Image (cartoon, rainbow, N blue to C red; front, side, top):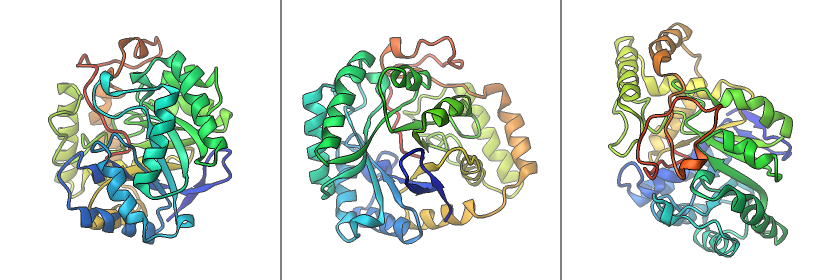
Length: 333
């Protein structure tokens, strides 16, 4: 396993992180014992970052993860969780200081730990950005001062929101998803700003929430039809070359040395081992070029999410028009 420096935190993180969404049966029903084994397998093979949220499986992911962590020394892993989003709809979110402070205590109880390393504002686009800046993040700083978290971070889909928030309030870490993968590399355009700020960068969903897989995404996936079709064609192309699109996608995501860690969710111990093996193998540059060319017509196609006003930015990439409350779990595949 390789490790990279995480912003100004002084930490070194594994280039592959473990995403807890699958422990909440977000993609399929899981066997709890297999989920526990998956966490143990990840840590045994050098993964030192685990990311989860109360939203995943309506607290189930944190509960299963807590059972797994009981058997692991606390200094063997870095732990990240989130606050403020608890379900798929706008009405399921609460960014108030009172709620997020209580949420941290609830998460610590489920996880069975005295502190998390990173406490993150989950999917900022579902909240009032001014409230997040003036109330949510200051509340999490109080959590930090109380010793319940070491660093404070923010997460979200619309990339422009990171700069909007960071121009007004300091954060230690960000998590972006679906924006550094084969079909969408928009995060690369934001990297110079993030690196200048010295924040720790988590990249998640390198398979674009299963768009970049043989089986394809589940019905709830918000991707437009054209993007789905091109990703399916890319999967077929890889199969015709005796390869696998998911493997290529993961190798591509971790190859960016400016991104310290890429988070992948799975509840399969065998898949964890396979992922670790695959990122150590050389990438097929010829196949990569073919896949990127095939995906070029839909490159950086994204979708609006959360409050409409949080998706309106002149720098944003083309968006597919969908229900803005469609669920999209970060920290996933």
